[in-house]
Amino acid sequence: MGRKKIALIGGGQIGGILALLVAQKELGDAVMLDIPDKEGVAKGKTLDIMEAAPLMGVDSNLRGTSNYDDIAGADVVIITAGLPRKPGMSREDLLDTNLKIMSDVAKNVKKQCPKAFCIIVTNPLDAMVYAFKKVTGFPKQQVAGMAGVLDTGRFNAFVAMELGVSASDVAGTVLGGHGPTMVPLPRTCTVGGVPLTELLSQEQIDGIVKRTREAGTEIVKLLGNGSAFFSPAVSAIEMAEAYLKDKKRILPCAAMLEGEYGINGYYIGVPALIGAGGVEKVIEIALKDDESAALMASLEAVKKAVAETKL
Ligand code: A3D
Image 1 (spheres, rainbow, N blue to C red):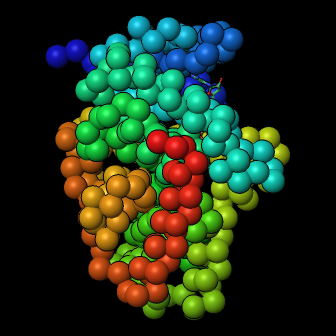
Image 2 (cartoon, rainbow, N blue to C red):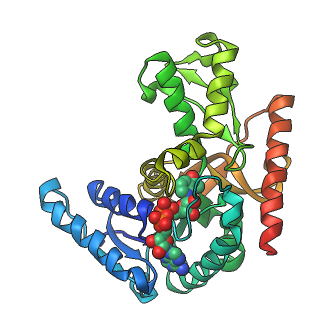
């Protein structure tokens, strides 16, 4: 049994961190693919990491390319190809440009690695993962969007900061579309087994929910150019690792729903069981009326973006 092969489509800010994490965690060998104009960047970043491998004590071969033949037979494909936001832009402002890119990527991935577990990161997330699934025609288990892991990570980080405890002990969940309508669920969040609602006031919780919804925008404003890249890369790697190691992790991610949560035919953020079968199962949480209403409102935002793809 050889090493696993991980294709990284897009060698920008997130792509670079993904490559470093693949090597550091020895998940397999990585091929970073970018457009011909950026082939040098893909080759440069991967060579740079190869040269760090002996220092990190890890064995992973990485290379850069602009030729899709080089990703043939990949076990996992992580797609970050596309434009990121600039200050003042919504994720939906990226739709037209990124849809063209996503359609092209999807056709090539279908041809080169029809069995790969595919993780979409490109924004607007819920519409891009929908488009990728439509264009490839891959089974729903094989295609997931990365957003919930990150949105939940952000929520958990803010809770940990507020309480002064380890973020590892915070277990929150965020549902819904990846945007300002997302639905953090403080009611189900626990900290070391204690319900969050017993540890923080409603006002503090409301503040954390609001900050979580706007967390991506907060980073876009601070950076001034481009969007978050460390945490999105870590989040996508969690999903890839759950698949490659058959970990059966329950990770919030954009999954294709067929009746779960009363939603049919859309990708939206829900807790999903990820193992060797890809998205093996969607976990349903019994929602309170207000939570359910918030999820439906988020679905409307997702539907609007999906309608714009005309797929
Ligand atoms: P960036 O650093 O610009 O990298 C994108 C890369 O994609 C560039 O190197 C481009 O050259 C490359 N690219 C463009 N077209 C193609 C193509 N046809 N084939 C292959 N590569 C191509 O952006 P980034 O890495 O910061 O962000 C990538 C995407 O992730 C953006 O759409 C962001 O909005 C999105 N993003 C999503 C989240 C989520 O939580 C869902 C978080 C942060 C960023």
